[in-house]
Amino acid sequence: MLKLQNADPDAGNRTRLVQVKKQLVDVSGRLVQFEEGMVPPARMQSFLEGLLARNRAIELLGLKTLAVTRVGAALAVVAAAQDAATSAPEEGIYQHGIEIRLAGTYNELLNYLADLERMPQRVMWNSVNFAVDKYPRNTMVLRVYTLSLDRNWLVV
Image (cartoon, rainbow, N blue to C red; front, side):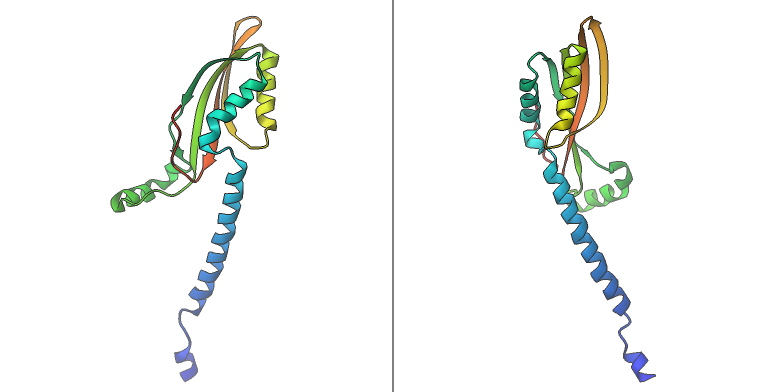
C-alpha cells in the first residue's frame, strides 16, 4: 500500500507529453520540408515574370497582390481572439496570392499553365477564368498562391 502511495500520479501524463513532443517535432520537420518546396513569397513576382519570359507570345494585362490570409483562419476565431488579447504575433501557415491577367491564344495560355505545373518549385492555383475576346485572342485571369510560415508579404 505504501508503494502505491509513493507512485508518481503524473507518470502517464509525462509519458504522453514526451510522445506529443516527438510528434510535434516530426510535424514541424515535414512542414518545413513542404515550405522549402514552395516558391517563397518574396520571389513570387520574379517567379511569374520568369515564367512569362519563357512564353513570350503571352501578353501580361495585369498583376495584383491578393490579401494575405491565414490558412484555417475560419477555424481559428477563438485563437485569434486570444492572440489579440495577449497581443502576441499569430503563428500559422499563410497563403500569399497574386492575380495575374494574361492574353494569348488558347494553346499559348494552356502551355503557360502546363509550364506552371512543371516548375520544380511549386505554387498553387485555385481559380482560372477564361474568356474569348476575338478569335484567336483569349484572356485568362489566374489566381496563384504560395504558402509560408511567414506572414510578411511583398506588395506588387
